[in-house]
Length: 84
Image (cartoon, rainbow, N blue to C red; front, side, top):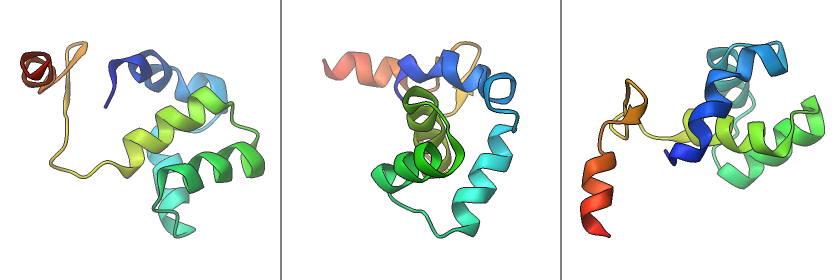
């Protein structure tokens, strides 16, 4: 997950009134599996700001073996940095 979304993820509940897990369950229950579809669904149906919709979509739609958050950095940030 891009680090630009870390701050947004930490504020999801305070800004949206729902926990991140609740948003993920909502997306899954509605069969949303595409990032663009998720962003539109959250923005249009739940008045979530574009930035938070992106952060929620990125976090909820990533596969389980993707990045894990650990103390302010995503587990494989070093790997990404090394590629560039």
